[in-house]
Length: 467
Image (cartoon, rainbow, N blue to C red):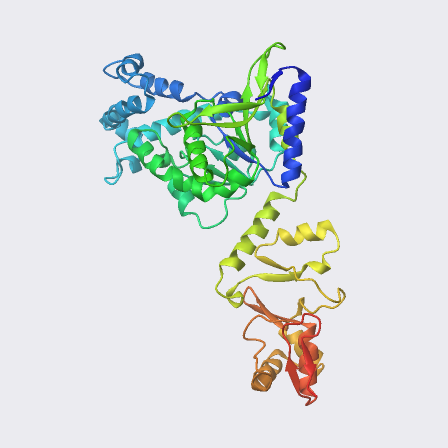
């Protein structure tokens, strides 16, 4: 393992290595975001401080320190004590009158009151956050300039949603496992969120459930965790959540790689001041379950601005990318393309970036990505309404009823009723029929009494005349 002096040049070299790795991977990074980020920017309490504040808010038989001693500093067990304390507190008549009625539903578990109080504490802290007045304004601006593939966080607060409003929150491990669509451009809140306080992971029962689901979450995200650049930020090196994630990754990866170092992973550390004589390893070995460990790239910084600038990648608007991803997902999962309720356009006719972006931001747009033999022919572009098609085929007297009848009449002859499904001549766009110019040619040929044989495999000449 290489040890370097922690001077400016070595920091720049590591940032350059990260930048080169991002460029070589041609992928967006995955960011694991821990409580250190919320503490830094929003002055949120860490877990220890949160539990202590919960003790301070109500009268308990003994103070916080007493239970910490009794439970040997195990915060999960200490939180178990708070479940009963807050349940008793909220059932007091005076408190009950001032609290939301939903808390007292018979189906709620006893810990609902503690979770509700946690959400109140975090929201109170967050109300004081103003990024424009923050001493970290420069860092926050650089942070907002990144577009990672997704965020994974154990934080309950809404800091990431506030900074990345176009990313979709996905809350709790059960929700993540059950999610059908891709997690790209999402904020995976694996320990729950203040927005859904019942989802918060806080006591032993919650953690038992979470630990059961942990391997399933990692299995679902394994492609991301193994093939994408992964950045851990805001965590301590001995954080149990990171240890669980990396232990699961190592178990899954053990068959595929004997390397003890995950070259795609970076652990970012922060220090208020770093001595020039301090030696900093290139790789940090993090302890896992038992005696095992795993190595990741290591970087210690006094400011995250340069890091976020390195993570910045030029990109299409996130909303546009999500729309494209959603549409492709709908196509892939559909049993039949003819059942899709989507719009269609041919990418060959998108001549400039503005036109491309405008199309991507439309809801339910399907791009025909097939290469055209003749880019000037509108074989896969459906530009005609039924009335326009009728007039193109039958002249000014044509109407949609006439063209529909004609299509039905010739269906047996050509072996296809072109208006009943999606094909090179017709597509259903959100319940509305649209036709291509190829349909005009086909129907005119049939109108003139000529025999044709359909060749739907060709996007340039959809049919040819029979010999």
